[in-house]
Image (cartoon, rainbow, N blue to C red; front, side, top):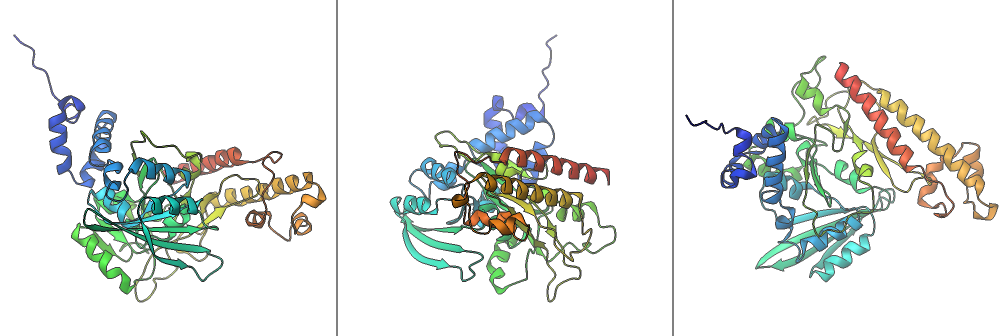
Length: 404
C-alpha cells in the first residue's frame, strides 16, 4: 500500500510549489499576509522571500522614478535618507504612486546632484521661516514614458530624518517609511488589520484628498480611538499610546533586496534604537480630537551619530511618567559629563566659547553639537555605550508592559 504524503500550508506557500505561491499571494490583503507570517517560522520565511522578490521588490517600484534604482538606493544609503508618506504606504498596499518624498539626514547636496544627473529639474524650493527648524524643501519633476513624476527632497540640519518622518505624519496610517535596506510599517495592526487611521494633529482642509484616498483602499479615518479616555481602555487602544521603538515586534518590517546597493556607513542600530510615543491631550481638542507624536534628539559632541527618543509630553492624558524617562535623564547627564572631560583635554585655544558655562552647568553641553565637533583623531566617542544603554532601558520598559 502506497504511503500518502501530507501537504501542509507551509508546503503550498513554499518555493517548492512556486506556481501555487505566485498565484495565491497576490490575492492576499495586508491583514492576511500579517496573519500568515505569524503562523510559523517556515511560512514567515517563505512568504517573506516571495514578497521580497515580487510584490515588495523595491527596485521595481522605484524604476519609474530612476533610471537605475540600485544607484539611487546607494545614494539613499550614503545620505541616510528615508522615503515616508504616501509612497511608503502604497508600497505596503502594493499600489503605484507617482510622487516621492525623500527626507535626507546628511549630504543633501549629494542627493540633489544625483537627481539632476538623472534628468530631474527643480520647479520649487522652499526654506522654512523658523530658524529653529532650518528646513529646506526642493521639488523636482521629470517626464518618463509620457508620465510626470515628482520628487521632493526635504533636509534639516537640526532634525534627523527619523524625526521628520514621525512628526510629518498626518495620521497613524502615515507611519511607514523605507530606508536603503528595509521597509517599516510602524502601526500595521491598526492600519492593515483594523483598517483604521487616527489623526496625529488638528484636522485640516488639506486632509480632504488623503482621506478619500485612504477610504478608497478601505481604511477609515478617525479622530482618536473611541475608548481613548476610558479609565481602562481595551488592548488595541492601549497599543496606540504605548511606548514604541522602530523595528520592535509591533512593527511590520520587510528586508529589501540589497544586491548591487552600496550599504550605509551608519550602523542600523542608530535607526532601530529610536523610540516614539503617540500621546493624548489631557482633554479632547476642539473641534476635532487628535493624538500627537513628540520626539526629541539625543545629540552631543561625544556622539558620532544623532539618536531619537520620545519626549515626555507634559499634561498628556494617561501615565505622565515612565521608568524610561528617568533612564533618559540619566543618559543626558552622563553625556554632559563626558563632554566636559573631552573639553578639558583640549588646549585652551581649541576649546569653543561657552566652556565656562558648561563647567558650572549653566549651559547644556549638547548645545555645542551645532557649532563644535571634537577632533576625530583624539576624541573619545560614546555611541556603542549609548546604544547599549538605550537597548537596556527599552527592554526594561517592555518587561513592565508585559507585567501589566
